Image 1 (tube, helix red, strand yellow):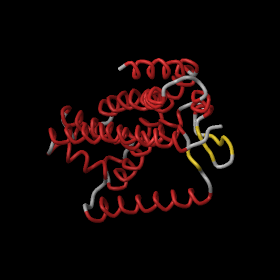
Image 2 (cartoon, helix red, strand yellow; image 1 turned 120 degrees about the vertical axis):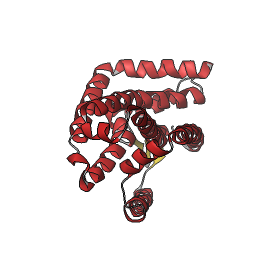
Image 3 (cartoon, helix red, strand yellow; image 1 turned 30 degrees about the vertical axis):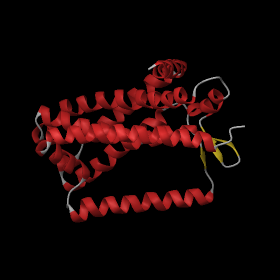
Length: 240
């Protein structure tokens, strides 16, 4: 508990140093997201396909790039890329656990808070979502997407501690990403014959309680995994 308190204080210090940038990024994020999501083609096939792509980007990747550049992944030396703030904090007498949790807390401020506001505004402004889901179903749908944002999005936060990036690692990452996208496309658009958004709507409507339970369990497991991953990376990397 003490580590979490210190991690929160450390995260708040970082956010305060970039508070103007933070609020500006959040407002821009919300405006752009709502602009694209509300105008969704009345739920036609192409509209929902676009919604799938937009929601994945908005919930899983966009929050990381809302941070000021000096807090994002940058080349440190050789093939080592990391967040300069992490490099600085590693030189101070700060517990590894505190540093790791501070990364996750900072990312959460850039992701969870704007996403909750976005989801509320989306339901109020988009008649398409109101026609398809009741308020309760939409709340469960929102929980699912917030969970997806944490499960995948925390990979971006985890990268702050550092990665070795070179042509070989870039090729491997590209292969993994392309293969994953191909599998997702095949499963949802060929086998299940519907998009990710449509299926999360269906799951939220038909298996409400199970959706909440699974979302919570998988989110907790993913947080544990990313903490383990960050600890392992920090042990492997030479920051000097």
